[in-house]
Amino acid sequence: MTTDLELLSKKARRQAAMAEAGLLPHPGQEELLQRIEYVFITPAPEEAALLNACRAASANMLASICIPSPWIGKASQVLLESKTALSGVVAFPFGFSPVEAKKIEAFAAAAAGAQEIQVSLSPHTLKIHDRNGLRREMEELRSALVKSELTFIIETSLLSDEEIITIVRAAELARAERVKGGSGFWGATSLHGAAILRCAAPDWMGVTAVLEAENAKNALPLLAAGADRIATSEPQDLPGFEDISRQEETPQSL
Image (cartoon, rainbow, N blue to C red; front, side, top):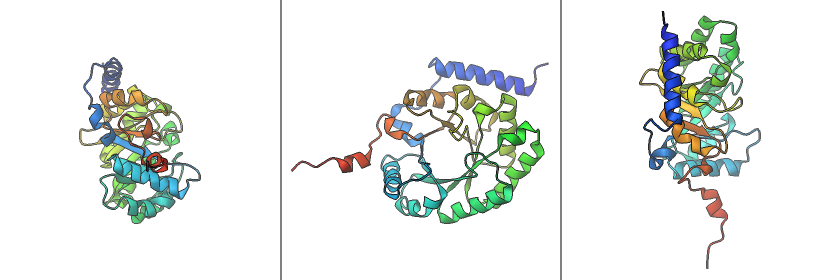
């Protein structure tokens, strides 16, 4: 007898194959930038570069920009009247922090002005089959962040379909607004990864796929596979993106 998990996995494989073949509808190029999450996370970001990234995200009307917690306060001032949402990351990228530490970090990011809080989940929790512990952590974070949009980062490249489905269902019970298919540290979200997230998630939950650097052509297939948002550290490679920092560096004609 075919189980529900097997049916979802089979559906995702078919959806990914059709997306790769160009047989599924997706938003046009003119809508692409509005679905982009600009990931500007580096070990030692320069203030000028980070603020320019915020301005570029706003000018291009990107969906959001994700930055390190120490810079959220300054970035929120740049994005004060922008349609681009400001995201902060918690326990990034490993997700090993205890839930109390995650809540403290999340509170600080939200207080500084982050509208979305992205929390990294540790794959280790599932590998030791502690599903109850995972679910409790997610529900505690949801209860603590009642005024923030909550996204759970799931390392799809390290997990089986069954493990991914388990996390997404726990995220649904926790009423998270979104799931994201990885931190980017262990590779991009595959078409199958995007599809399994979409197949497992309820209609009201958003799905973010991580785009491999220098592979802008895969953005539309990922949207076709089921993602509604694409995370990338290289938005300048996408068609239509205007890099305002480069414009500022270009000497004006007399």
